[in-house]
Image (cartoon, rainbow, N blue to C red; front, top):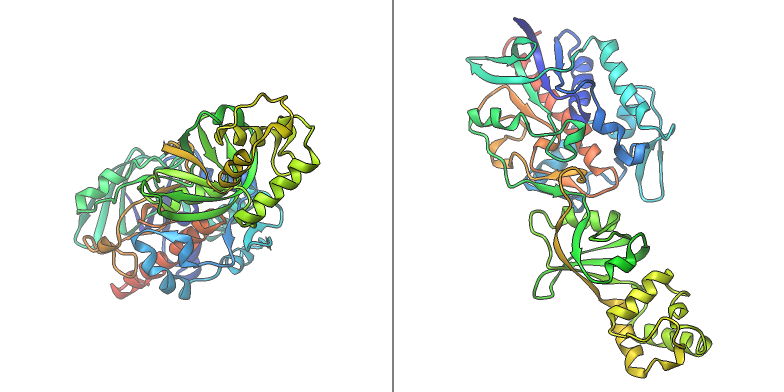
Length: 415
């Protein structure tokens, strides 16, 4: 049997942040990470298209997060080190883009993982990979953990196994059933930061097209739930892009009835109409397929004509358009609808919507059912939009949970 002061389940972002912080504030404590993958931080390497968008200077903007645990953000932010300084203390410098997103100056996710992994090694953290947790029991003031690599006795446990998103990177929810022994439950979990599956005969034409728009998620009665601006990416059966993925996060567990694209959000209806008539005059003898190329990609322009019910041949001259056609095009430029049929699957999702709810933890991220059991990261019921917010939550919650873990141990007579 191996004994440890702090046992961390999961070597992802929040688990590694917790381990580094633990050894800094309590160097005499024995810290162990159990990771069921072949190596720690696999999901971290895939973030930001390999560049690792590791945070955002606007953290902890509440509008960027959803979930019951959002209520704890101000307290957690106030009592943890900001992301820039946290990584600078490990010799890693960050750069900031115009929207506040933070990246390593190296532009490589591997340098972020190396900073965490090598810091753990230098501090003497035990990292044990290829280790499956089989059972978890509590006896008085200790936890007994049976694993595929033997038995561990721990005085405290920090659960940082991630969620269910991107299971190919190790976040597969395999630990969740073990936590139910203590009475823990999970709010409904759905894929977030993922594309929206849609139904539209224009999608086949639009496949591969990217277009800037203001995208609104709308209910069946036409109410706008949320709106995001950005680049929409069209696939044969879905819409994606950061703005659409953010809507998947903001809509939580409910899919909107449809997505409405405003292709010219900077213009009023009157201005769009005037602009279309201007193009009509300048291109009156052009082919219809080229009519809207001044505003949109060629495929998008032609698909929009079809959506507006204008079924003239592609090579028909522009002057065959009627005033009613221009009026319909004006409306469609501001409200191009795509019926939502679902959202992408877990393999495509970047983060999990749902998790352990606020009512099952206290303000220190400790279980209300099992003292000495703490949580951090994606396993909790909180998730953010794109832009580094989810990794920011991982670093801050990892620090915060371990600060309280150490306090818990010291109050019970630890060193």
